[in-house]
Amino acid sequence: MTRPNTNGGRAYAEAGDAQLVEWAQADDPTAFGELYTRYVQKIYNYVYYRTGNHHDAEDLTSRVFFRALGHIGHYNDRGVPFSAWLYRIAHNLVANWHRDRGRQKIVPLDETIMSGHGFSAPEALAESLEEEEMLLRSIRELPPDRQQLLILKFVERLSNAEIGAIMNRTEGAIKSLYHRTLLSLRDVLENQDGSEPRPRRRRFGL
Image 1: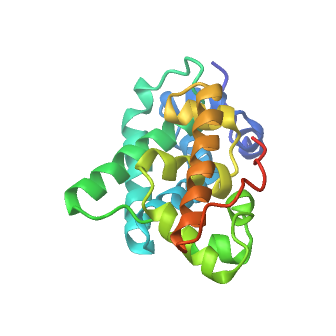
Image 2: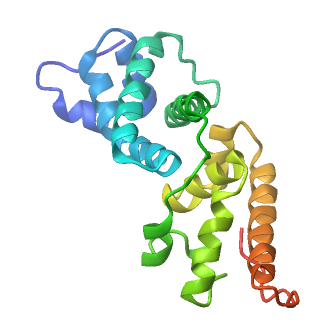
C-alpha cells in the first residue's frame, strides 16, 4: 500500500473514499480527517432534520464519527459506499436517541419547505401557506422510514440508488416508497380541509 509522503496534502484531497478508508485502516489519522471533512456537514444536516435541535445534532454527529473511527477497521466495501455506512450509523444513533427519550419523531422542515430550498416536489403540493402548514404536519406524522427517505432525497439530494444503499433497499423499492409517500401526503392534504377529494392533479417524477 502506498501512502502519501509528507507533502501529500493534495493526495489526500484527491483520493477517493475507498483509498482514504484503506489509509485510515492503516492508522493514518489524516486520511480519516479527510473523510470527516467530506461528510461532517452532510451527516450533521441529516441528524438535525431527524432531531430538531442543533445541540443534539452536534452531539450525535460527533458520536457518528467517533463510532466510525472506532469501527473503521471492520468496514468492508461490499458494494456499500463509505458515505452510506456513515448514514447507517447516524440512523441507528438517531433511532436510539428517539427511543431513549420517548419523543415523537419530528422533522423541522419548515425552513426547507417555506424557503423553497430542496423540497421541490412536496412543495408543489401546496398552493397556499395554509396548505404548506398542513404539509408540515403531515410529514411529521410519517413513519420513520418515509421521513428518512424525504430527508435523504430532498435535503441531502441523494439519488435513489444512493438512498437504497443507505436504507438497504433496492433502487426500485426506493422509487416505489417515494411515489407512495408523495401520493399519501397529497391525499392527506386534500382531505384535511374537509372538502371532497379532488382529482389527482399530477404525478411527480421519480
